[in-house]
Image (cartoon, rainbow, N blue to C red):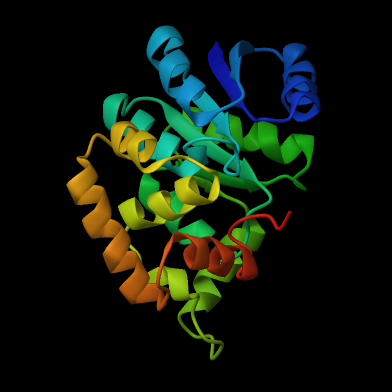
Length: 212
């Protein structure tokens, strides 16, 4: 039996996927979560075999949650199930430790295939994402300015965009405020911005955060 946890901040998506998987043989949905923080706690409690993880969520978001869960529970395989298909998301999602990558436009059959593949220890990347990654090195288009960021720096950008305070970000990343401030100043330099407000506007303009 493959034990599944579903993580998404939208109830309809989370419940819909759970319903789709509920009647399948050898698959059992044992937990659901609506934030990355909740996913980290429930992963420790329930020890699922596979997690379907959204990326854009309140709080720390999906990428930081993937990194934390994989670090603490390397046997848990995580499939990013997301609408985030443009760089730097694919590179950072895989760098964080995701074992699979599916777009939310994938068919149910493709999702089931991905679940069985990663549960068996085989990586599964959506063909559209795999093609983008393969063409990335040969493309003449300018790279995303966020590709120069480390995974920690990228997570800080996403958390700032989600409205977390400096104190909350430092606590969730287990770093000091001094270390966080050092990272922020490096971010400013790399992205040519002067403060958090300009940084958040810059990330929204480049599609990392949803414009509201």
